[in-house]
Amino acid sequence: MTLDDLRVFVAACETGNLSAVARDLSRTQSAVSQHVKRLEAELGLPLLERRPRGVAPTQAGRILQQAAAQGLGQIELALRQLRDLKHGDGGAVRITTGATTVRHFMSDGVVAFRHRHPGVKLEFRTENSSRGCFDALAAGESDLAWITIGSPARGIEQRPVIELPWVLAVHADDPLAHKSSVDAADLARIHHIQLPANSTSRSHLEDQLDRQDIQLASTTSVADWDTAILLAELGLGHAVVPALPGWTGSGHGALRLIPIPTLPPLAAGWAVRQWDALGPLTQDFAETVVASLTGRPGRDRP
Image 1: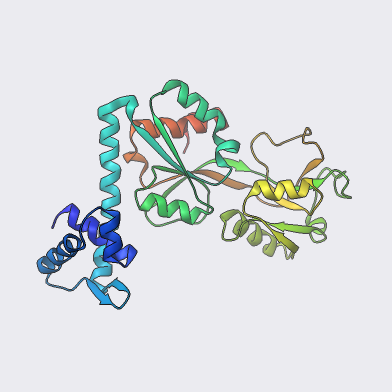
Image 2: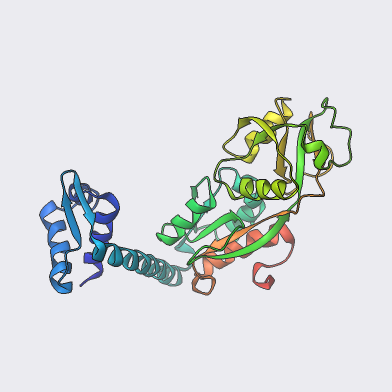
């Protein structure tokens, strides 16, 4: 059993098509089949079930696929970290984020990191949910993920960095715009712009509203926080959103951001597979972003 055998087998389980695996890995279909047959012979169990439109893992195959996928991700991560140690500033840091995360949370940190490490490659990947970020980490496709902190996820460590108080975003001409804060009674009357479906922020908000027995009327949904804020600024509804770093006070044109003190703040921060296993460049990037947001180094935070 070799790492190559396991890589090919996991790819076959994920795609369900040996021809596609052969094409993606630049190999013949016969070579792909040989990898799987070698595993089956060694284990004495069938691992793939042939179907009219491809293949699917057997019960034994699913057990091996889950273990192999996790192990391969860790090995790939370790190999990347070893390459970083060998090449110094010639390495790379891979970050999975939301669509607008870099602009709101990382811009100063990215600039500071780039000044210190001009030769390091920064690779940003976009996902629209924390689950998508966790999947990228688990698959070894990312080193760090910036997420909205939520429920524990198996095999993932989450580290809160900053708390975001909730605000109501409204147009300056809206009847609520003059208020210094809003409460539950105010929220019950708004035309709500829903946050992204399946997002941790939306789940957190809905849970808190349910606890206060508040039902919001909604005719609009969006794919990210920025779009919700823009629609509110245009007077097309009300957005209950986390206050992004630097978005306090006046200076937002026709937009008004009104605090909602009855809602507990939302936490955002880093997620990784294992903090202690991060390479030095990745650790430095994470800590630089934390310092730019909080003024404190990331390693000094709990």
